[in-house]
Image 1 (cartoon, helix red, strand yellow):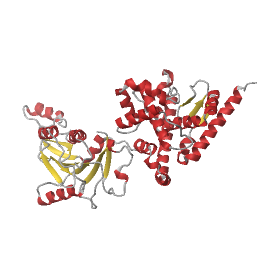
Image 2 (tube, rainbow, N blue to C red; image 1 turned 30 degrees about the horizontal axis):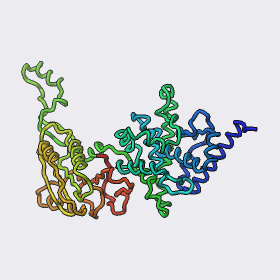
Image 3 (cartoon, rainbow, N blue to C red; image 1 turned 180 degrees about the horizontal axis):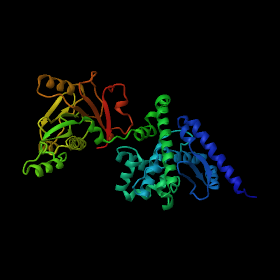
Image 4 (cartoon, rainbow, N blue to C red; image 1 turned 90 degrees about the horizontal axis):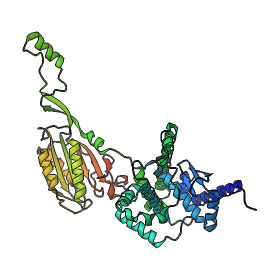
Length: 442
């Protein structure tokens, strides 16, 4: 006599409860995530699915997989949990649905395959191992976004990849829902709450790894590195650079603040004599004197540096309508590794454009940040340079920092692609407490 539907459901619930316990015992740091999904029997999904709140499963199919190998259930459970942990169901945005689904599957399978934990360890097919290795070589960072970009450029490989990585059903992900649910305000609010809950869980797990689990080497895994990248605060580089701006007077007629009422009244009252004239100056927000230092120790490429320079200069000079930067303004660009290699004082946009176009990295030695700060201090003391409004140091962050804070604000800007291992320099004890930091994608 066969089992009733209720018996199959109860059996399925027991199977996933056992899986959760086994995963917890072998990876205690993941408990907040493993405990975040309620298992629910549902015949409408393809084996296993999650919407960020529940874990839906087909009882009979789950039992069959458990009988084949319990580790299949453990891996499937963890696979869906990792999708939630990294917010994959909330972050597709305008990306191609099929490509995004595969990119997220590749990411979480890559994390699981690397764990080396008995509860999820299985023999990796050689072709899957080769495919993952290729993706890791091509992607600067092992994240769903970077993998997605790789897949978009290599569409011919997608079908061969999919059979190795597809585990669960993504049909319940919020971006994939039907039109009616998309317009349902309650549904959107519920998704937003779920996303915030998983962000909190993600941060807690990262903290757990950093404080209690370093002894077992978890901080060197794709899981931890991916958590660091995901939880990194996203700050607009444009908004950040505007911190260095201050009011500057430009000699030019300012028609925006000119009061035409008084002007016309004077013409009517006295004939040809206006009561007021146009203001002969205008106040804008600009950086009076800014210094950009490029670390030329071999940490960054010419393409990355020129991209950084273009964006930085465009933002810092965006308010000026003249070709030059104004009488009091200039841009000093310094190349430095363990010594000053090149210094350029640029006075207008044309000089900047020429410099960026012809830019070549000079140096490639070790990194000593103190040299640039010492050089600026000497130049300011001698009167050859005015005190900077701020200093932007573009670097990978590995070098000797000055101990004493200078008399101006300093921000160390790090290229995101330099930290695929998740080890960010500003988290080290060597990074000065007085300096600001920013990670940018250039």
